[in-house]
Image (cartoon, rainbow over all chains, first blue to last red; front, top):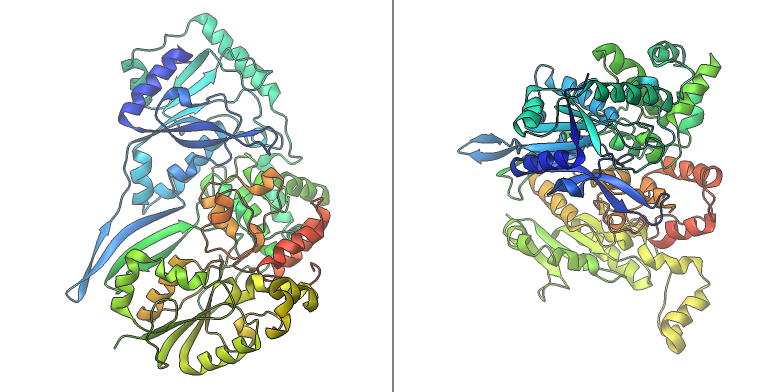
Length: 360
Length: 247
């Protein structure tokens, strides 16, 4: 059921209104002449709606850095009369993320869950509570190699304030800008944004029929890639702990961590202190960490719980398809395939799951 | 008492010494915390009672070898700074050419006036306590080293690849553009400055470990259709890798 339908121009007017109160972040195209196709999309800050491309294919990086930045200062500390003071540093600048695909919305739901569990992460919550999210649906797969449909993360299941469905774009040709969007409210703030902005119309019966047709077409547009259904991946992995595949695949792994760093659901971090030259103060900083990096599971005294790349690869796959799912009930992987595209050794997760399926 | 610090140069461009002077707005803080007692590029006074000695440049002449032994004797802690001191640097390019050729190329008809030896990192001649690699040395890392030394904290180099910093900066991976960047094999700490400006990494901070070289050998042979010699030339540029073939 749609809450509204809205024309492209009216949507742009609403987004421009949002930009008056919030830092506006969304998909922007950048030229990449050496690539095929010769452009790539990135989330970046913009001033106006018309700078965004809401019919983008995929963004190279997810919007995660705007909620959980690669590095941030948690607090500043200073030595004072034998003791010390500490001042937390919270980033609560109002932000609007506009143009988030379902895969990334599903990932944001996991981040929300992880960082909100007691004790809640104040730094994440400060950003998240001040972030307004406008999702935009994909009528078809954004590129080859994605397996979002296998994980049912080609559909939004929440995590947005407003969700947009491109209703009269040409589903067959990429890059066509739709003239009209179906609108679904995900929060009170989302509903107020559209209603108080006095844009869009109440959907007619014909609009609802168009939306039904859109959803029917979408169901057939997404191929499945996994030979084991996502629900059964935990059992598949349970049986595959001692598979020879881990060693055979990881012999190529550089342990560069690229898969972790582009992943929209990876949330591991490390914390380090930076002191001033005189040692009378400094900052406590956190930065992204990654389970594929050699030092990730190394502890005091030098022991490394996962010193071999194969153990680290298996750990990542277990996290993504088994452990996070079992622990949170949410998707640990959203099938965006950013890890596969980023892998400098061309290690492919779909191939891993499918080879394991054939082994057992 | 402030620790006594000295900065020396062997064969190289002295760019790493210069990088210290380029810490312009931090120099007064540094001079508050340490006493510089010997620094050819920065001052005329010289003494040889040294707590921490920093050395840039490679050992590339018999004189370098004598000099670095002398420096080692007078420094409690010896720190190699820059690709030349840590890896041999660009100087090692001559190691892959016939001596006659490069001597004539560099010194012309006066080649016999200038003795030269195989270029090597200073750690192959004397014990080195710490290394701050890079071409040039990363001045922020130098500052971090000094901060750690003053506080008595253990200093370690990043133990991960350049890719980590590159991805944190949100760069488009050069592999997507069809280039063989050495980022996955190279020690981070440079904030991925070369890929950020569109140039592939050339491993000026050295190779992370043996494992990445093995992975590189497999990937470049099995996954990428590239001239191995070209990649080898890149790996050799700063002396990160000296062997004639990938494992």
